Image (cartoon, rainbow, N blue to C red; front, side, top):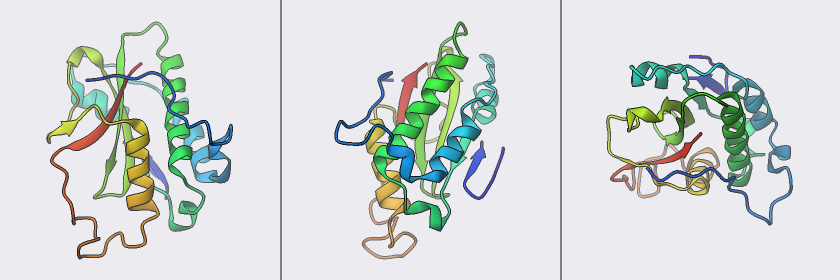
Amino acid sequence: MRSSAAASKQAPLQQTPLTHPRHSQNPMKDSPALGRWLSMARDDEIVIDAADINHEASSNLWCFSPCDDESLGLSAAALVDFINQVMTARREKLSGNPSMLFYCWHDAQTRQLRFSLVSSTHGRLPFGCAINPSAELAAVAEHIVKKDWLNADWGKTGPNGPGAKTALSLPVFVANL
């Protein structure tokens, strides 16, 4: 697992980028952190191990969380653009290899965006909890940015704190690469 202050490596399927026409051609331009994260994750080695889903998942895992001063330039649209660029790079790197599932989610306990790849032949994702694998990428990004990274109340207890509403299942965006 790689780590810096901001990043570490650690169903219904969509393949089209999810960007909104109102946003600029480069939503990531206001976030140097996203550009830095992209340069780290874009060309990373992909581990394919159809016999061991946990080895595959942990070997292809990346975790991202901005430092406080990096949060200001972040937006949900920029995060969607970042994730789409990572998926495009992963798809190109996999060209000619067996099909893999790219999946990402918000780990609220660590305040991280996490994503990984596993072989689609496993027929499942490696979670030990209930998941919602039909989550939209834009919804996952919006939740991470608005309810965590830009939320001044994050970490406080009470009705607006992070434990105020517990989801019945973890929203996970999944795409077939």
